[in-house]
Image: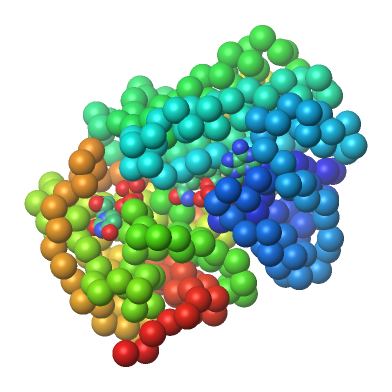
Length: 337
Ligand code: NAD
Ligand code: UDP
């Protein structure tokens, strides 16, 4: 079975690729490398000990996309490609809509034309918005606080409409909570670029001496220790959920949605202290103001994925902190001062 991974050179897509290869699937990757490195393809092949085709292709390029579908007998698509930086999406929304929505529409048209009927889509817990109580359940009402989040809600709706209209088409929407960690080899992981917006990349850059301190954004949240709570999930657990979703698609009709999280929230302080303990590093802390639009708590109800996909997480917060840092240590200059 040949699976097309869009955005397959990215953080999550590259881990999915290795997991699929390890499970006996063939893969093809499409990426335009706007947020990833071409070397990742070679490294993935090295880790998995298998080769595969990759296309330097933008999802919005109709001509090139046609070529990919014409040249390959694709059984299913895992659609990870997209822009994902929240502040950037607020500052410059049009490219976000153009890329995320435009790319998806083009992909779905190709799938229809070439009779590819199965898609797994990378959605996000951000679609639960500001007003739902935790734990988040798949059937809750959706809203977004930024253009990035709206692109996820819109794509989810497009998939529902598309699978309703096209009776053979099936979609599994996976709502990721907070993926962190990296492959245990330390050879692939989340690419650190500029000043990170997300907590774990920020911690890693501070630990690497690239930032003077870590920033705790808000200590007055309605949580046990006052800092924001999120459901961090190891990327290696997350990608196993994709294999389960792919298998499940054969037995589904229409669109199904699954939360992929641990079901457990951890505060900013908990993540920092775990990172320090596991890695034997002490980080300088700075209390900063809340980020606009940030919620107190976000964690998943994972009972649907457990019951219907037979999937649950296995790796701990300690594993996540160790593997995130292992990747940075192995691949980027780290100051020991
Ligand atoms: P990433 O940026 O590392 O990977 C996305 C990949 O898509 C990149 O390699 C990029 O070059 C590629 N890409 C973007 N636009 C493209 C286009 N038009 N054509 C071809 N390739 C294109 O991001 P990631 O963290 O691996 O996230 C993967 C998916 O999961 C995204 O859709 C993201 O929104 C979603 N998601 C990520 C997180 C997270 O915390 N990482 C959380 C929830 C959801
Ligand atoms: N956060 C923080 N310092 C940072 C980045 C984030 O304290 O430098 C906090 C943020 O307020 C939130 C948590 O860490 O409570 C997770 O933020 P992240 O951006 O990683 O995930 P998201 O909020 O998008 O779920």
